[in-house]
Image (cartoon, rainbow, N blue to C red; front, side):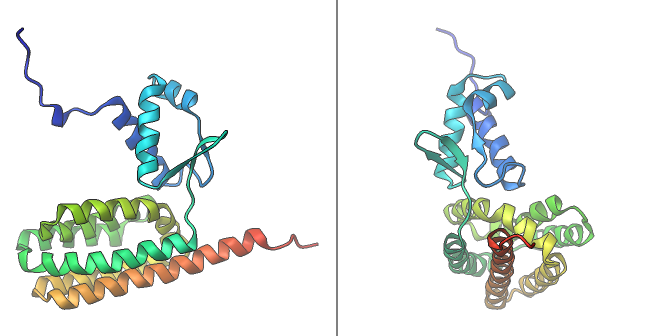
Length: 229
């Protein structure tokens, strides 16, 4: 049998396409906490069968973005303060190590790429762009670590936090603070000072956690307060 060779690593399954679209909608807040993911509706939207939709929902569940409830189906999973605290603690441990491994391997080209992302982050006025550029900045620096498993695991952790961090950047004036902290981290990397870069990264993460915790507390208080007469 004569078969034409296909590079399957460059193809994307229908389930993968649906997964990426739903993941993006959750991260950007288009799908809110508790929103149902109705398989029939999603299948119609993507002009596909329910099989790829089920595959996508399974992948989202594995990443902690969706929870399947008995009799209700899949819903977008919210983030408790306990969950957030654990993820931020995890980030501090892993990102500090990744930074220490990355800095000695960084080339001038990597530093310039990160600098360009910093400039774009500073100039951007769209919160959706802020989230993308924030992740791009850190990913660019961490790429030099040559720790693919660490980076993939961090990506999953960031997916859980991303939609809340975007709101926090917008509503707590966190954009300017994050920009200044990025510049400090970048300066340490440019000097080749891995320890300072790691310490600044941990402070950056802890600051984001404190700001997010305050933001989530305000939201919780808003919804739990009795209506004013």
